[in-house]
Image 1 (tube, rainbow, N blue to C red):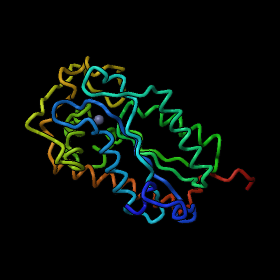
Image 2: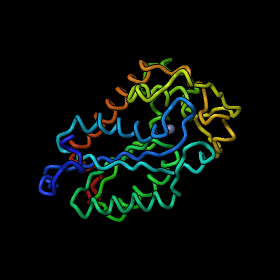
Image 3: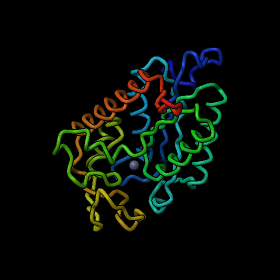
Image 4: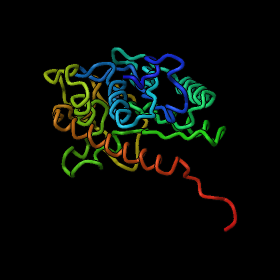
Amino acid sequence: MTNHLLNLRPGQVPHTTYKKAILAVGATEGHGPHLPTGTDLFIAQGITEDIAACFDDMLVLPALSYGVSDNHMMFDFTLSLSPETLIAVLQDILESLFIRGIFRVILINGHNGNTAPIEIAGRRAHQRHPELKVVSMPAWWTCAERLLPAGTLSDDSGWHAGEMETAAALGYFPDLVDMSLAQDCPPRLPYSPLLDVKYTIAEMSRVGNVGRSSRASREKGLAIREALKQEAVRFIRRLDEMDWDYAVTQSPQ
Ligand SMILES: [Zn+2]
């Protein structure tokens, strides 16, 4: 907790101590009867804490508790930002970090509605300030399965509050999950790793979660948690070894 910005006094946050900052981007939205409203925030914070614990120079920023959840508005108790608002907030935070002298930022996303705004804000910030390097984990639920041994999760585990996300919740905050309330709501929509459909959750589910949540377990969640941490830490350590200098030289050979 000593690396949390909100716990530090001004003199304790020199950019020589904290070379990089990490920000969890969450959401406040319904996740079916069995998961808390803060699920996306808590997962993003859990990933963030696991990563930050592995680095001495990583500043943990106050998390964003709201995200773009407009396609969940019919389910309690969703509060949403517009995509434009989230882009603007992220741009302002990145700009502030640049002004404060922190040029390496990691964005950890917990919610699919935030993926596009994070992409836009991150690209814009880097194009405006090439010294500002932005790394994001834009959609952990689309790649967690590939980081795990084959067969750990079902092929269609990645739906909203389905098997994968419910397992992750059990891995990060089991005390807030009530599996006795979990209802399986397999979608009618077919799954493709290549194509997606712009749907509302009300079109996909009667209760707010999609997929087979009952297949989740804490064991699967802890496997997801460890896999996400290992891959993120491996990648950030590699960037550190390169001093985040990943651009090819443009000078003639
Ligand atoms: Zn979620």
